[in-house]
Amino acid sequence: MIRSQETLNMLLDSISRFVRERLVPSEEIVAETDQIPAGLLEEMKDLGLFGLCLPEEYGGLGLTMEEEVLAAMELGKTSPTFRSAIGSNNGIGSTGIVIDGTPAQKEKYLPRLASGELIGSFCLTEPEAGSDAASLRTTAVRDGGHYVLNGTKRFITNAPEAGLFTVMARTDPAGKGAGAISAFVVEAGTAGLSLGRIDRKMGQKGAHTCDVIFENCRVPVENLIGEKEGVGFKTAMKVLDKGRLHIAAVATGAAERMLADALRYAMERRQFGKAIVEFELIQAMLADSKAEIYASRCMIVDAARRRDAGEKVTAESSCAKMFATEMCGRVADRAVQIFGGAGYMSEYGIERFYRDVRLFRIYEGTTQIQQIVIAREMQRSFER
Ligand SMILES: Cc1cc2nc3c(=O)[nH]c(=O)nc-3n(C[C@H](O)[C@H](O)[C@H](O)COP(=O)(O)OP(=O)(O)OC[C@H]3O[C@@H](n4cnc5c(N)ncnc54)[C@H](O)[C@@H]3O)c2cc1C
Image 1 (tube, rainbow, N blue to C red):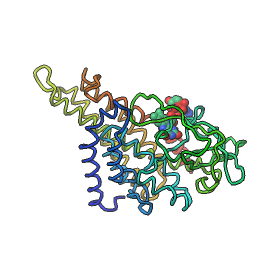
Image 2: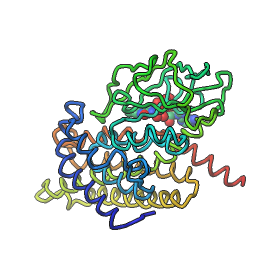
Image 3: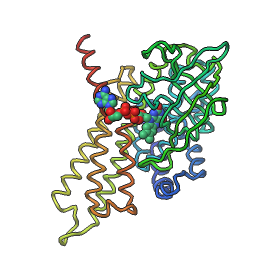
């Protein structure tokens, strides 16, 4: 749902200009230094990018899902590292509180997440629990006015910078299933919380992940999200339903950027006496990419509108995440091919995108997990 086309156009224009004029020229330096310059982060805060999707009453812009995916497509047109910097505050690092938090939890954390003063993160994955997240082992045992957390979370985006961790842990250690899992917010600096070393990754340099370790970490009972035990896994899945549409949109924006770069190169590069864009085999790669990006946009906007209308979009989110991220991978591969040898060379930038976008098919549920979710939803609707 678009609330005001005019206001949205102004926002999309300002994001697009910021991406073009400030972020694209900084892509290489961020990749080289593995750091986003502090000045750029401040500009992102001033533009309200950390609070795009947070409710207006807590200082965010309160974008609807349709507005959010359109904004995410614009942000996708530069290095995914920049989107990652604001991604957890707008999504996985705040949605649990937005959807299921108590008024006091919202009041305490959302304004600072919306301004970017506080960085949020989402701690679900563990060394032994990835795709099978419901088998997580971190425990949270009640002790008077506190829960005592023990366990290790793995590959947590923005954890090195985070001031707040949304943590899924087992409040009934004897209970094996998802119903024994609860969600907590844990503040950085809490005794017993420590971080592992920053992971070295294939791409998305400048966006950081690390382990988050809990050793007898005492968390006040008020930090149990919604002050309700046993619903933490449901909270996590609701967070991911929304997050998957966002990632699908970012992947689509990245594919558009790579296709634009490939088209420009094909128009300029000459072989056999003419621009390579004149060769039909190059045209086929451009055309296939254009059509797939268009299909992806339509699918994402449709799913977003349905979510705004109150429909449950678990299957549609997974369809969009699977299609858009796999499509993005194919476009990245074709873009490198169109660049030829230059596509393999760092200075042209396209190999960096090729590595950066590989992640989209893995996190927030791998493609195989999306397939499982889609098929399960199909079975459920048949049974109904
Ligand atoms: C850069 C990065 C950032 C991340 N950020 C976060 C974060 O902020 N918070 C967080 O909680 N997690 C995060 N993750 C973790 C991410 O969500 C997991 O890596 C992902 O869900 C896959 O889990 P896994 O790595 O344990 O792989 P595994 O689950 O071990 O999967 C390995 C392979 O087996 C396949 N597979 C698994 N089960 C099945 C099945 N039933 N049927 C068919 N195939 C299957 C998978 O698709 C995959 O191909 C991040 C990961 C990365 C790499």
